[in-house]
Length: 223
Image (cartoon, rainbow, N blue to C red):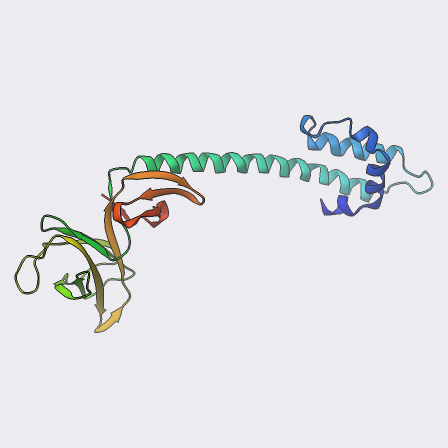
C-alpha cells in the first residue's frame, strides 16, 4: 500500500477526479473494484509521451491482490476474535460453582479443613508448608515430603503445632522447597469457588469468592 500512497500520479488522479470518485460509496464498493477503477482511469489519462511502463503496471496490479487480501484477512481475524471471545465466555460460565486453584497465599479454615496448592517447576526432595494466622504468627508446619514437578494440592486439618484445634477463619501460608539440599523456587496457590463470571477487557473474568476477580489464564487447576 505504501507505493500507492506515495505515487504522485495516483494522488493527482484522486484529486482531479474527486467529484466522480465521491459518487461511489465506500461501503458499497469492493476495495479491489475501487483500485481497478483508479488504475484504469490512470492509464486512460496517461501522457502519451510518457506512458506507464510495464513494471509500474505490474506493481500496481500486485497491490490490488494485496488490498483484497488484507481486507479479507481483517474480516477473518475479526470473526476469529469474536468466536474466541464467545467460546471463552461460555467456558467461564460453565465454571460457576467449581473449585479452582489460582496464584495466592490465602487459606480459609472451615469445619477444621482448609485447602491449599502449590506449583513446582521441578521435582523437590522436600516441601514444607507454614500456616500463619492473621497476625503473622506461625500456627502449623506441614511436611509434604518429596513432590513431583507441576501443580499439587494439600489439606490442612486445622490442627495447630501445640495440638489444639485452630479457630475457623482466614489464614495464609508460605512454601519452602528443597532439592539437593538447596532451596528452590515454588509458587503458592490459593483455593476458592467460582461464584460468577463476566466479560473483561482482556477476556472472561471469574469471581473466586474472597480472592476477587481473576482471569481464566490464572487458573492452575479446576476441581
